[in-house]
Length: 105
Image 1 (cartoon, rainbow, N blue to C red):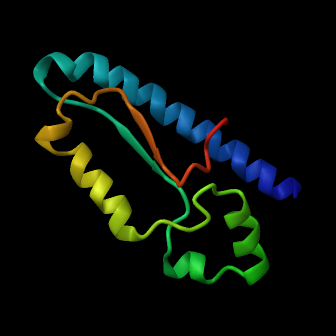
Image 2: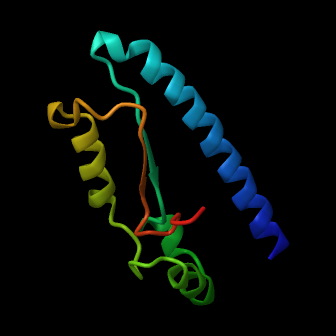
C-alpha cells in the first residue's frame, strides 16, 4: 500500500505543477482568444488496464463512484469539446474526467 501512496502523491504533485503552468498560460494568452485547460482522465479501459489483476481492478473500481472505467471515446469526446468553439469561454480549467474518482482530493 505504501508504494501506491507514493505513486498517488507523485501524480498529485505533477497535476499541481501542470495546473500552475496552465493557469499562467490561461492568464497570459486569454486576451488573444487562446485558452489553456487541463483534462485529467481517470482509469480508461485500455490494454494496460486490461492487464491488471482482477483483485486490483476490483480495488480500483471500488474507489470510482461511477463503478466503471471510462472508454477511450468518452475521453476523446471531452477533448473534442474542450478544443471546440462551444468551449471558447473555458479557460484555466482543470477538468477531471474520472467517474468521480478525484472528488475530495
